[in-house]
Length: 316
Ligand SMILES: Nc1ncnc2c1ncn2[C@@H]1O[C@H](COP(=O)(O)OP(=O)(O)OP(=O)(O)O)[C@@H](O)[C@H]1O
Ligand SMILES: [Mg+2]
Image (cartoon, rainbow, N blue to C red):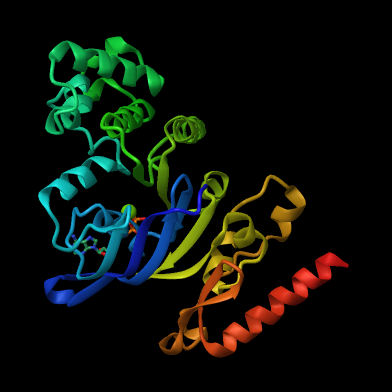
């Protein structure tokens, strides 16, 4: 991980008008940076706005307001088509549902080479065939798979095809929207390991979206916890696990089972009650270096004290 900011998100909002229900504030003023080479985890329960965040960043939706900079360039503002085309290649997405995200009427070769054709990266058919074969092998499939259709593959294999499609245009940044949650548990680790390998090999930066913290911890350098359109806590992954401060983060952590029967017997599932604190006066505050929490001034003081006591205690 470098200290060069690849993505800068500032006060991003995505509000949907949905007739009867009024305005849904799916993403409601979130800010974070992602550094080149890192894996940034975004977690939170179903409906909290994770996919909307990813889809807005990659411009599948126009943002309601806020700023997104990629490589220092504002990609949501007015820009030349050249910048936009480059951006469309450099940022790719892997989708949650490997069944719905691959066109059933296209062969694997057509799916993977679509971006190569659109961006004019390889002009001749022979070259594209070779590139597709190479990509299939990179993601652990066979080159013979190129002529088949998506329905001939398992969920894990389809997700590998989705990864090959994303890699085909040599991106710098990949948004992986719950890439493993639709997969069998036994396959999940394989796909995560593949993503880690590819990250090293191609110096990729990831925004990794998930709804539980167990796998995200393993893959992420830093983690942001989202709750109803807002980021409530952001820290290095170790720090977040060792010293979770926001009660919602604590409730998410309390939901992770551990392979320890003693722990399991005593495990208390915490339930977060947002009414416990006055969310009207909350702001994103840095409680200890690089550890941010959405809190009131009073909570900030308490968190700061708690963390200092804990760290001071551990030093003795
Ligand atoms: N295109 C849309 N139009 C209207 N409302 C939407 C749209 N997309 C999402 N929403 C709403 O915005 C909120 C956030 O949805 P989003 O899909 O981003 O959540 P999520 O965190 O990705 O959930 P999950 O873990 O289930 O994938 C939800 O209330 C959802 O119903
Ligand atoms: Mg989602």
